[in-house]
Image (cartoon, rainbow, N blue to C red; front, side):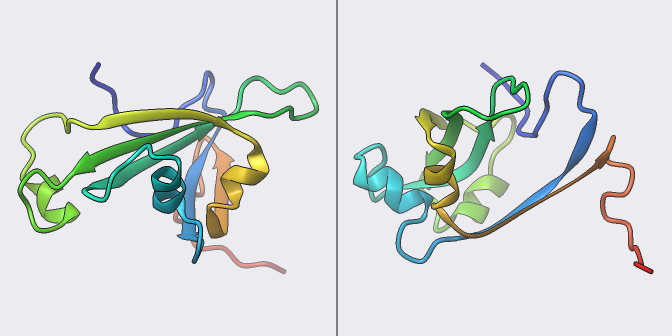
Amino acid sequence: MEQKFNASVQYNDLLGSVAADKADRTGPSKWLADKRLINDDEFIVGISMSIGENHGSHQDPVYVTFLVSDLKGHNNVPEMLESIDGPMKVKKIEVDMNVTDFFALFKRFEVTMSTKGMIEGKMYETE
């Protein structure tokens, strides 16, 4: 099934971006390899994490999707991605995780959101 890789929820009231640093010892690739979900020739090209409907409190799990590809005869992932004409073909690995286990895959993690993304990428000053 063809899909667009971007975050979207029912109403998209808040839109933004995310940045993360992989953990030194237990990043996403190592976690998948340790669970024998990927092999040495496969690379994560995308990660999506979603949370179901919350009503004032969170209950695990969170739903995590890893999009994985091999190099398809190329030297590196950027080169492979540049060569693709049309939708990228990936292996989709879906897992349920505790939220703390998901965030443990990263050394640092930051999310920004603003109403309908109105201030995404804008400079601001505080008083």
